[in-house]
Amino acid sequence: MSSIYYISKSDIVERVKGLKTDKLLLVVDENVLKSYEDFISNLKDLGKEVIVYKAKGTEGLKTLAYLEECLEFFIEKGAHRNCHLIAIGGGVTSDFAGLVASILLRGVSWSVIPTTLLAMVDAAIGGKTAVNSRFGKNLIGSFYQPDNIWIDSSFIETLPPEHIQSGRGEILKYILISSGIYRQAKDARTTFNALISSCAQFKKLLVEKDFKEIGERKILNLGHTFGHAIEKMYPISHGAAVYYGMRFIFELFDEKKNHEVLDEVTSALGWEFGSVPWKGEGIDVEKVMSYVSKDKKVAASGVLEIIRLKGAGTPYIDKIELAKLNELLIKRKANIDAL
Ligand SMILES: NC(=O)c1ccc[n+]([C@@H]2O[C@H](COP(=O)([O-])OP(=O)(O)OC[C@H]3O[C@@H](n4cnc5c(N)ncnc54)[C@H](O)[C@@H]3O)[C@@H](O)[C@H]2O)c1
Image (tube, rainbow, N blue to C red):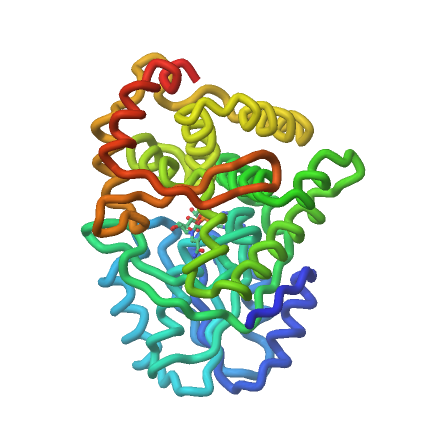
């Protein structure tokens, strides 16, 4: 199981120093490398051998070609079984580096230093690692838990606004699926750091109960089924797509109360998401269906698993046949268009 620590950069350096290894393999996002030179050089100055792989700072990193390049790079530099790999970056870096750690020399231990809001509350936690296939996102990967997740939320200070918004989309999802986080979000005394740690702990607990996502962990996918389709159709971030994916599913099933809960917490936090990306032109039902039918959660029988909400803090797993979904989409299209 992973341990999550909320600590400063200097404390992270101390923790890394304490790792029982003589060799560190760092996979560092290129933009993080640029903005945090001092931090990275402090990690290099611990009396251990440090090998740095500079990772592309875009989704384009998550390919078999870069996976091979990174594995061969570390092997050439003398990686051994007792090395410890550290991913430093957002979800792209941790997805990629975790997969490297899981197959390099049949697996080396690893830790994550998440530097995006989305990675702090979601991607760095849970041990899902992956690169993309030409047939779809995250189709080549493994479940491989990091030993440590070291969170210093001040990394967010240099994060571009669209990536802050992305993390907020995922945080809103946690608020809707957890009654404790819902109450916390409405409490004016809550700090942003406290919200980050509640989301991260909530995911950690779910992962401990259901590591391979065969049951309860699936509730983390609220907003994701349609969110993934929206993410492919419009140039928006993952978390923003999850936010619109929640709006989409609430409207599909005509759930006004759920819209109100989402409005309530979004405005309590002073956040704004603006209009849906299909405003004016309407949603392309055929395209949505084509992406949704390729979802990993579609069973051979053509039944799709979707996460729905009874109210704040009460998510549940529902199933719908693809043919029924198509009918419902056509019936509710005008409402979804008007969101
Ligand atoms: N494994 C999981 O459970 C899981 C969950 C959710 C998402 N993901 C994956 O996460 C990925 C998205 O990750 P993300 O949203 O964290 O974005 P990201 O890793 O793509 O980072 C976003 C951008 O911010 C830059 N960046 C990162 N940290 C920075 C910092 N502190 N200052 C300035 N720039 C910085 C990066 O270079 C990049 O350009 C997707 O590939 C998605 O599939 C995985």
